[in-house]
Length: 248
Image 1 (cartoon, helix red, strand yellow):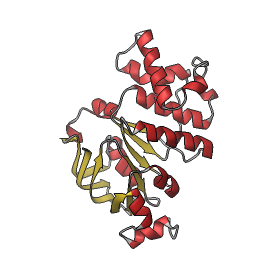
Image 2 (spheres, helix red, strand yellow):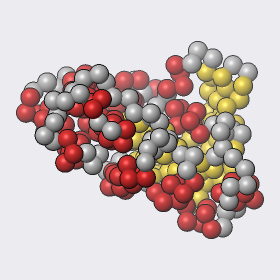
Image 3 (cartoon, helix red, strand yellow):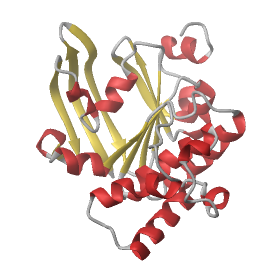
């Protein structure tokens, strides 16, 4: 089942073309890895999926981007961003307790019942593989957590509002191998119930977790295919050169 359908998408920031005539589908319950060198349009593509690019006053978009067959520009912005959550490269915990960090978005949506909140927070932390590490310290400041724990806390905060899609923008860029492995393990479990789009500069990570991989270069989609095929027999020489580390 197709979750996102992108057709002939071009994005500008002022006179600069960031994405050029992109067409692809994102399937429900898959992990789509998006790879490419710097300034290839990966993050612009990711931010387009929940309209974060619109925060830039010079943003202009042409083409179609549909979520469940509905143009994302026709979906109420608050509703879209609840359905399509995002986890950024750097952990962004709020200056509050672990519990209140995860509860923040849930409370914003009007849920304040203590028992219901506790159940939602526990479930979200379990899905983010963090519950066992923090269950006895939920009242402590989120800033006391390690970097890897803070990133998983941000994942839990996103999960708590029950999105359908999770966008990951370099979620492991500053993390140690153990923390990275925990987040990748969480992704594997999460795709059973969520659609995941992962932008990563770590080609090996893309190969480990992606069901399919899309390779972007200077704003163009060079190719998209099943990950195992992409990494063994890519259809474009530029893809092969990038995967092998010849540039980027």
